[in-house]
Image 1 (cartoon, rainbow, N blue to C red):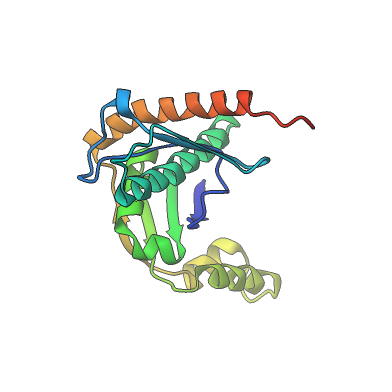
Image 2 (cartoon, one colour):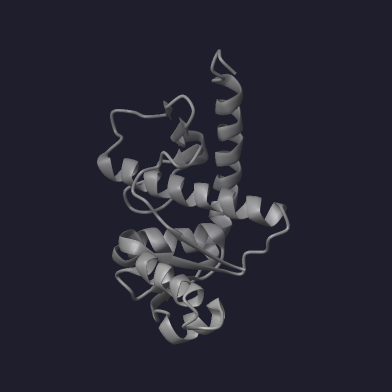
Length: 188
């Protein structure tokens, strides 16, 4: 199964924690790790480990990793439910305009990510399905072969960063579970 999704700039679609990284692109020591957890139902933000030395690049990298770790949780959930994810296709503005985010996602997911060349991938997908419903094409596979967009680039996981991310991803999940367990709303 292919998993196609669009990365949005907001992190509110993910529950979890993020890692603040050093501005030179390497993970800081885990004892100094900084986290952010956002809980959707309560809109509570946890900022842990911030200091006067925290700068905008740290926060940006933290947000990127939050989105990528949240995406990994989604992929893991599909696979835990028996739906094997064999490839990822990135669509939309962020996927086409931010090589950093897409490379980070490839490293976190540990799978290649293809980026569509189309500026209007969602509209193209709708047109593909409409062509099947309107009996222009006999099935979705045929419509995709005829109408589908090419890929403009592909990002491959970098083995050294994949291994580092495994440790940080586990810490991310642990912190998310802790935050959820300790910030239940009174209405729950």
